[in-house]
Each structure stands twice: as C-alpha cells, then as structure tokens.
Image (cartoon, rainbow, N blue to C red; front, side, top):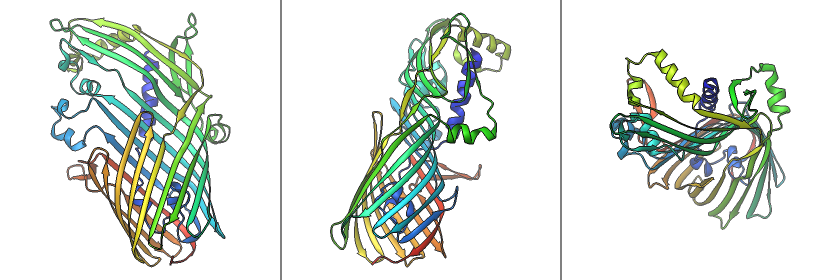
Length: 462
C-alpha cells in the first residue's frame, strides 16, 4: 500500500513538473503581423500570404495565474500565513509548444495547421490544508483541521488543429478551427473529504479521509487476491522510447475533440471589432490505462504532536513503522471505468481604433471557464509597427481581483524570419541577486510566449 501511494505521488509530481499556467494571451491579441493570433481568434491573420513555424520553437508558451496570494506576501509573512490565505486558493498552470505549424492564403481564404503539445495543471487548495502543510497540527490544538475541498487536475495531451477563415465581405471575416485531442496522461479529483483532529491535552490525532480520483497513465496496478477491487501496489510501466510514438501518438484511444470560432468586423475605416471562443466543447474521453482510485479510512494515535515527527530525534525506522501503521488503516480500491476531462473554454471580446497608419489602440475582455471557476481580465493596449520589420505592443490589464498588470510584446523581422517575444506581466517580477534569477514577486499571473516564424509574401496593410 505504501508503494501505491508513493507511485501516485510520483505521477502527480511528473505531471506538475511538465506544466506551467493559464495563458492570458492579452498582449498578442492586437499585435501587428503575428501569425499565432489565429490560435486565439481563427478569423485573424497576419500580413503575409504564407507562414511556416520552425518545429518546436515557432511558439513556446508558459503561463501562470493564481487567485489566492502573491509570492511576495508569502516570503514577507511566512509565519503569518493565516492572514494572507483565502478560504480557497486557486492556481492554474499551462504550457504549450507548437511542434509543427504552417498556413497559407488562397484568395479570400486562409488555411492553417498546428500540431501542439499541451500540458495543464489546475488546483484549488483550502486555507486549512495550506496551513497544515506549513505549520503541521500546532495551529489546530483542540480543533479539527478541515482538509476537505482539495481539487486538482493534471493533464497532458497533444492537439492537432486545422483552421479555416474567409473574408465574407470587405468588412466581415469569420474563422473556425477543428481540433483532434490525443490524451497522454491525466489525474483529477472526483471527491476529497478529509480532516485531522488534535486532542487538547494528550495531542492524540484522529485522521479521516474519503478521497476519490481518476487517473489515466501507464501504470501496472496489482489487486488483492481476496478482494479484486482492493489495490496492493501500483508501479509505473517501463516504456521504451521507441514505443512512445506508436502507443501514445498514433494508436492511443484516449481521444477527444474541440472547436474554436472567431469573427472580425470592420465597423469603419478606423474601428475594428472582434470576438472569439476557444476550446468550445473541448474534452478528452479516457478509455485506456484508466483507474478510478478510492482511499477511505480512519486512524488514531496518541501522545504525539505531528511536528515532533519532523524533529531530528525521530528516527527513520520509527517513521516507517508509523507510516505503515497509518497506511494499513486506509483501504485503497480501484475500478477501470472510462471518464471525460474537459479542457475549459476561453472567450475574447476585442476592439481597436486606428489612430495613425502605424499605431492603434485596443481593448480586450478575456475570460476562462473551468468547472465553477471564472477567471476574467480587462485590458487596454497600444500597438505600433515600423514598416515590415518591427512591431511592438504595450498592454495594461486589470484582473478580476482588481490587480493591474503591464505587458509588452516585440516582433522583429529579419528577411523571411520573424522573431517575437511577449510577456503579459512584467511589473510584478522581482530579481533575486542571491540566486541570480527572476521570480514572480508581487504578481498573481505570468505569461510568456516566444518563437520564430518564416514569413513569405508579406505586404503592408493599407
């Protein structure tokens, strides 16, 4: 049973390491001549007839957003987390890499193709859970630490998308993208109810847990001979590198679909309106390597503070005995029923005003829907270009929490090669001279995107 929990923790750690958060895509939306805009509004296209993304580096996206606390608050008030944390602290991480991308224009029609690797990690942690991780049970003497309400989803998949857009009239362009999703691995919570009571006198601990989660990953699960639903151990499968392409990319039955829709309308020579919905109905149905895991039980032991388990006087052998005793009180069972993971829909409502031929200002409302979470932001931007060679954008964004972010974008075209870099929040980044690295000090969201495109048949828009 100890091996089962250990293996599950490894899977979660691997999925967490592979990802990084909800991309704002704010600065990119109104930026001049950036082909990747069609990924957030399929009706948008750059100034060039043909684009080819360099494999693996045409678009690399890293994002993060939380609705709980600022990192700088944690470092400045590490001993007083109770005053900083919310009842529920939500975090979202995303990573996306375009492995293959290209597109072309034929008359009034635009066609695009993308093959991408995407990873997503979303979780919500209650306040007591985080305080328990930080202080142990010393904050809950004579009380029950409510560890219920934990929710997380770790997802790895590939996306193959074909995009189509067409100029319906001189004023209206519409577009759509159909996406085939190939699920690689997943872990998500179905139900999490847990608590820990600490006695006020002898510090006895009473633990209880009722947890259900779904996983889809290359595992070997060994069931109890006497109880076919009770799990004795879980191990990761040893997959050879040559098996990855055929088993997980070509012959993987864990598949799904999704759609993007967009429209751009020129209200006048100077005013343009736009709207899009991405990942509409996007979901993956898991049928292969599926396990529905349940952990349920109670355990009580006396005379010891949980913090004392972490002291130098507590021997490793004692900890292993205690661990085995606790785990034996909880039953881990599992079934193999298929389930569905939803990606989460995003929407964009934008408008721009052409101040000069080389300068426009834009506004954008962007939202992300995931389960019962709605993350919204509101942005203003200034977007400029110098001929075909240089473009830049500056954006100011207000999040739903009331915080403001400053974003910047830069595109440089050298011959057919276009290099671009975007960051949707630079004001909150702190530099640590001791570690010689930047880190998200006072920010609650970060988003970076960079890449290299090859562009052909470019022209200046009138």
